[in-house]
Image (cartoon, rainbow, N blue to C red; front, side):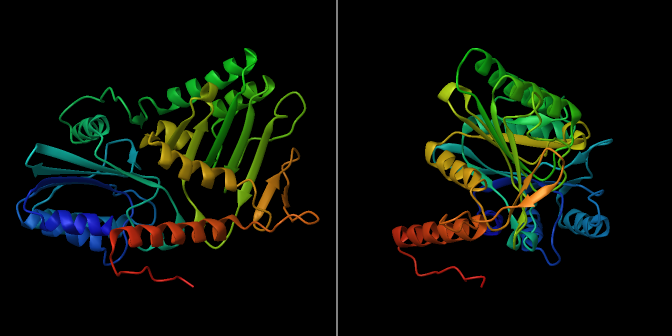
Length: 351
């Protein structure tokens, strides 16, 4: 992301950059790129969330610096924290204007990116780009809350969409079809979502939840949540990504989001959920998601009594520490990409 904005700031064919900023790091290169872009007369619009907890003073400082550089700075949406992670770049090409969109589950913060696990999606999909433009138009006051085609926005529609997706799996299970939900998040506390998950479980939907922090749902209760498993993983890197999977009768749907299943995210914040539709990308996300439930080194399983139990390898079971496994997989993919590109750069190992 840093490299992308750095190139966009210096590209004479880039006409506009629009970005949300919730948390930024000290000496942020990303901020420097946005400043440089604004100073070169590109249209730069940045929504800075001034009420991001613990980062208020820093965000005010960056907002003023961006304004001085000529950027259009928006100080959030009244009554709501803007927690969505999105960047839109508009570029002039020989074929006409083209829009590039980055969406993420984590903050645009170089420092925490080294210790948090997150997912991001880069796309030039016209449908997502249209939604991104509509999203920024709404936040800047140029339009009412938009009717989005691909993205799902809180507080306008995200709660309703989650409940609809959960209920669809419940109805499939009632019809005798395989039904499954897998989700990964920081915390699960929303009562309406929990009731919907209980109702789905009572109809036989298999539900696996990876919840790093607070979980108000109780799994494994007879006639209530027998088909629900909850795992928490606390390891070297802070698990921060939000992933939502629905079997959908075999036509699998995978979503990434900035939002947890918490009332504050669904009702009192501006959030975005976005689909992962490209099959190879789905495989990458699902492999990581399912691996969370194989960890037998750093995983803890939540019992029906509300007590977490540390998981240990049983008998001759191979040891699986999911963060180490995914880190090695990322290194392997990076090496393959470098070889295909024919470049000499090699990533610096972090250990």
